[in-house]
Amino acid sequence: MAARGLSEKEKAAFAANPAFEKAAQRESKQLLKKPDTNELLQLYGLYKIGCDEDVTEYHKPPKAPGMFDLKGKAKLKAWEGLLEENLTPEQAQERYIALVEQLKAKLGFDPAKEPEVVGNN
Image (cartoon, rainbow, N blue to C red; front, side, top):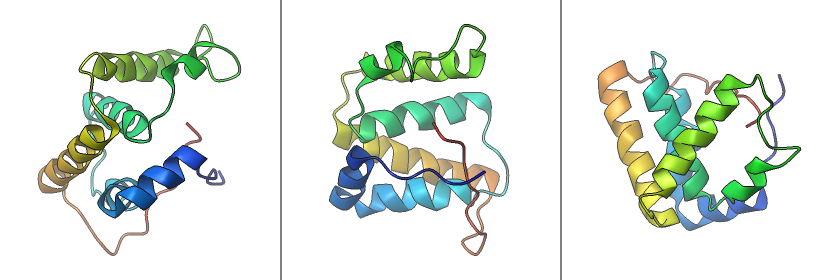
């Protein structure tokens, strides 16, 4: 599967915080084991908030999860749960970086590992 291009919001977030870019684009994909579902959902929600994405765009087609897209619905629910904490994008970025650091310690980390290509959303 080909990697998707970055949105303008992602590019802006990464330009403003290189540590967030490093955690999101490399380190989170160089873990030796896969994080559990709750950790993945946390990463997803923090990433979306950190990039200042608009959750309302994901409530309507074409971005809304379909009726049988349980994974997409779980991701949206996790994102919305974090939105209730009223995090700023900067706070979400810092929490994302901290979570990646925790996962590196818990799951192992190989800085030489080629980052895995992740899905398109």
